[in-house]
Image (cartoon, rainbow, N blue to C red):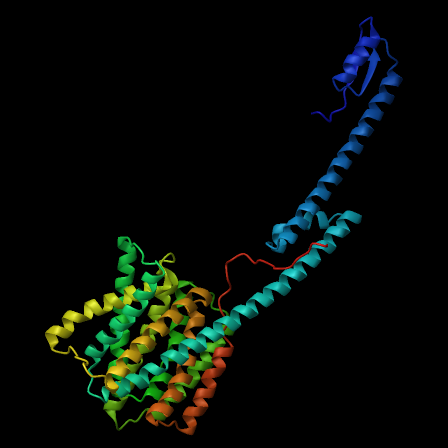
Length: 425
């Protein structure tokens, strides 16, 4: 109301004092009671013109203030083009509107460029972690096959490997003072994870490697990608884009060729073990989705893996005791003891890397670590066990690798921070 023009009409005798008081109170003009209507209309017109000019001035300064605020947001580095809210300003057909349009366009270009750069960095980081997971886990089939040849049994081996991994991870967590306090739901999460990864997944690996070559098992593990994709798409945990779908289908063709190289209608036992081996990628897929959707994010990564391994060891202990499968090691250090310790280190390392990969790149991209597991498993099998692959298996292997290129990490929900200095010295 303070910008509404006011004209005071007074019948007081002392006009000078009345004029001063009216002006001090904010009046635009003053007229005596005996005024000329023509003069009143003229003064009303002048006052309204001043009011319209003032409104235009206020609106213009408001637009300048909004543009300045947008510049401050851009300078802070935390923005996206929509948060600048410049569409209304840019639609004005005047110099300030054209400036806002240019500003909005430049901000959009900067945002898109930085977004592509961030996406590329995430892809490179995710790819490095994928290769690291594959390289470390790829040792597991070869080492477990070597251990089975030295008289170990799957249950006893699982207890030792999980126990060693638990000691390593919990020891690091305790040193870092990261041992957590869990509520009931968080504790149950670790129980479920221990059953899936520490018991079912570990036992399946050790049992299957007694009957299936390490290189062949590594190739079968690539099915994990398709299973994760299907589960994630159905549960809407991640977007099932055409690019991802095509990449996973390409890998599926490669896996099919792998199975054809070993599937023999006359050897029913071998075929049965190949089919049973497919439970391993299924368990990997379930673990990835559980970690992606249910993990307690406040719990330290070392503490998480250590708790899971410790719980799985505790759950397997009574089973091994009553079945007579407890495996004694030492006191002398031989090949089996070295293999068991190495498998414990490998098990802890692969889980830590996988946990971090799922948290940063998503379950679907983590599933592509199966391809890296294939690469590493084949190479480790050839180096440690003198295993060989047929030419058709190598072709299938190449097709599987193409699938990894076609799948990218999930889009991060975090706000994009552009690390660029817009200030001038």
